[in-house]
Length: 196
Image 1 (spheres, rainbow, N blue to C red):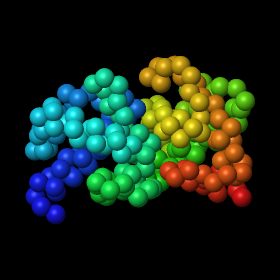
Image 2: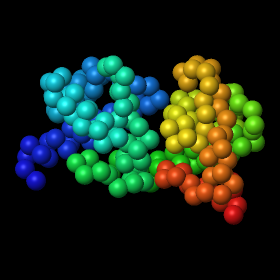
Image 3: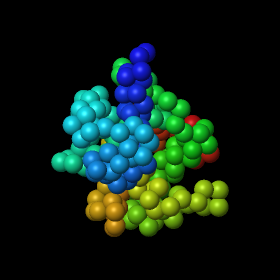
Image 4: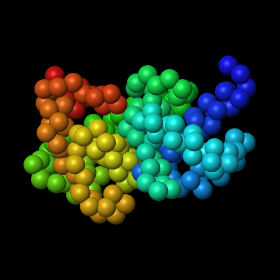
């Protein structure tokens, strides 16, 4: 791989990691430009947009106007849950402990919503149900993983994810928990919560 191609892959990797760090918020182009510059990977705005458009064509990111975010596929690539599409770097990003924590939190959210079904469960109840002495989580972590689960069509969110939101299982989410269908990548049903 030549130097220019290696630098391009490093820039793509950095963009994906920057968007993941921004979750559950979206990232404006200006933040991404600044982040690349601080990492000595500076790009002009036109070059940034070309890279983001490439990542969007691969299903890794999405955007609205100048705001960008990582898709569930992009998260799965960063977590090594799926093989990266050609042209997308798949560097070691997270420790095994962080990956386990994220996946356990996702299952805890699903189980909390299972107990709240068929109604929408308020975010405060979900947060209280998933946080305990073994896993203390922030409200930001809960909404970040709830948005991921919504992207996988396992839950439905209502309200504003930044303030007052509620969630409930979709039929697909219920099927996953009832083990009628296989869990999608990024979701590991932990026997501790769901025997089977």
